[in-house]
Amino acid sequence: MFGIRVPHPWQQETPVTPEEIFLNRRRFLTQLGSAGAGASFSIFGFGGREAAPSVERDLSGIPLNPAFSDPERPLTEEIVAARHNNFYEFGSGKRIWRGAQAVPTDPWTVEITGLVRQPQKLGLEDLFGFPLEERIYRFRCVEAWAMVVPWLGFPMRLLLEQVDPLPEAKFVRFTSFYDRDIMYGPIWPPNLPWPYTEGLRIEEMANPLAFFALGIYGKPLPKQHGAPIRMVLPWKYGFKGGKSIVKIEFLAEQPATFWNTLAPDEYGFEANVDPTVPHPRWSQAQETLIGFGSRSHWQTVPTLPYNGYGEYVAHLYG
Image 1: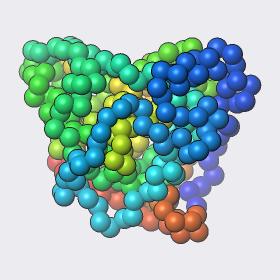
Image 2 (image 1 turned 90 degrees about the vertical axis):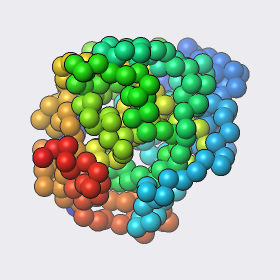
Image 3 (image 1 turned 90 degrees about the horizontal axis):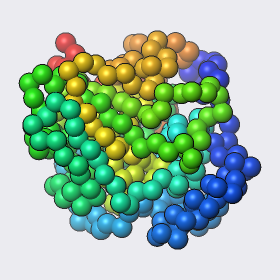
């Protein structure tokens, strides 16, 4: 349906956490220690713990922003969203949720630096202190599958206002948490450009759609979703949504980013959803909506320019 996909060596669909690696003594003890520190999950994934929140916060009663409710498509089932993830630090397949439980999320610090008048470091209390809202957004992966997800968080523009960028700040680089002792990634190729980084033009970050998610399905983010804070940019392909953000830098020049560095012909810096521009190895004209009802009810639908959010962002690219 999407053409024959011939993965690069670093994109092989293999089990992300091979048993021999997962039961490696160091990593086993790391995860066991995390569980002892209060992480709510089962080492072996029994009991549906893949949807367990990563930090203790009550997000009940967060209001839904009616401007972003997407009544046209059903929500992806929570368990499907919890099990079908990309988190390349833990491997190239979709079953990374077990390995991702090793990410230490509490305490957490996000450093904001670079060309700003108010550089600062934000902890969990600061992040959850922003005015929070729920937004139901479409999520479109560059691999041509799609979900509909209820995120909880705050608009990126609120952070922009707080740090007050200098006029020469034209770009923003977002850096994800990385610890090579627990994030073993794909076997090949070696020497990948860790940590994972992503970037935006500053006017993209200021757009009303741009969002920092702290929660999903009414609860704090599970770790495989990028806890405790991730980027959500619904008009762009999903790889642009950096997970587990630890640093935000305001820059004068366009930064290098992870996938654009590895394969610039396949993963552009802007990476806006565009059905007329195929990936070099498959079409982007259609997408499969996954995660509601049985697989027999999953639908293949036309891909919309900017993932259906053109009214908000098309003017940025004219």
